[in-house]
Image (tube, rainbow, N blue to C red; front, side, top):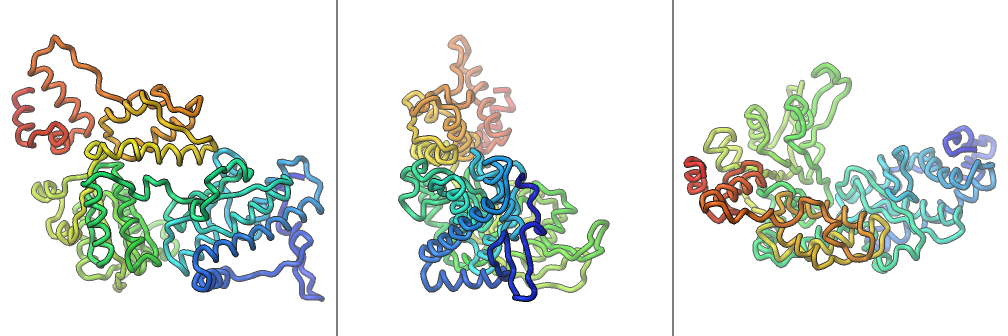
Amino acid sequence: MRAEDLDIDTLLLADAEVGALRFAGHRAVIVDAVALGTLRRELMTALGPAGARALLGRFGQVQGWRAAEAMRGRFEWDSELAIRDAGGRAAILQGMLRLLPGTGPMTPEGATVGDSYEAEQHLLHCGQSEEPVCWTLAGFASGYLSCVEQREIVVIEDRCVARGDATCRFMARPREAWGDSLESPSREGARAPAEAWETQSPAMLRALELARRAAAVDSNVLVLGESGAGKDRLARFIHARSSRARAPFLALHCGAIAEPLLESELFGHARGAFTGATRDRVGMLEAAGRGTLFLDEVGEMSPAMQVKLLRALQQRELRRVGENHARPIHARVIAATHRDLAAAVETGSFRRDLYYRLRVIELRLPSLAARREDILPLARALLADACGRAGRDKMSLGTAAEERLLHHAWPGNVRELENAMERAAALAAGPVVAASDLPDDIGPPPPQSRGGSLQQLERAAIAAALERHGGHQQRAAAELGISPSTLYRRLRRGG
């Protein structure tokens, strides 16, 4: 038998005479998901998060072990792989989750899961979490696989919808393969130290101090910084430390959605509002409730959408597309952009009144190039995290690799560094990352020819800076150590 041959009719038997349900031969009960969510909340209140996690994880482990015993005893399987995969199929048929095809916890990529009932209920009853919360599901997978493999398999969730990730992900390994990562209960699924904002940079420390102050009040916040600098992470940092932390944190990328869809995504729509609107839809401003809505790349909004957003923020109410009556807005708004909004206001491409409405508190994130003292500590932390995800032993950075990291311009900021460390963790042949394990474009710029004139060298430096910053003159000027007006004059004279 194959795992995909399992269906609900095969597994579920109702005995009306004795009032019992049997799932895979074991007596079972149907429990409402909201009731389980309420139990979770009460456990967290009574025992604290760590106690609730331990109890729910153990509950899931027993459930998974018994499911594996039932699967092994009732069916003849084509292979050990088939009975292993049957655990995921059983979880799907019990309404626990949706498993993306081709993924599984024992694979290097892990099991990618959508519609986790645990993440859903945690968000409903407890709000946004800083760590993964699918404790019962991780326990279920651990118990099931341990029974099938006849050795202790530990499953860890390292991505979770309740933490703001797009999907949940579960990784399974024998206990000994996890090493030190199991020593701390909070380590399971914990974010990399780099994401916990460990920094030595005065500019970053200042930004974090302002973020902590912003978290203590309810004002709108505007976060400015280059792409990849961590604007979304800073928004989550503020939300998690605010009085809204138990309510949802929702994120919307304003530049990634076409304008007609953006309006519906932001404000919602009524059934029949346009072709294809077959049901009412709650927009993100409304769905955020008393939580936080993060508007990423707000500078990409069209003038028409700017007007609609301004009206909603001013009146603290919205109208769904196709509706006439207003609905109250309770969410806090944190906006972010890599653009120079002050300059956009002066050119008329961004509304001045919306700019000041969003910019009650302004936070500027320094680029990675501007905080070079953080490059190596960040790289080491991200490398350790990447090794954990890839199932590899701990690695260190070689001297040549460190030199290349320190002399790179980092136009992609922390995101680029994170990708570089993930590549190194995947490709390094030994425990030390060599320079050749890094992407080819990471390192100092190529040396200039000594035969060129000073003007030629200057022209080349300006061109390289503009290329690194996507033509953004203000950021290029900052890197070169000159004013934007000086850069403009030198560009006009051809050098």
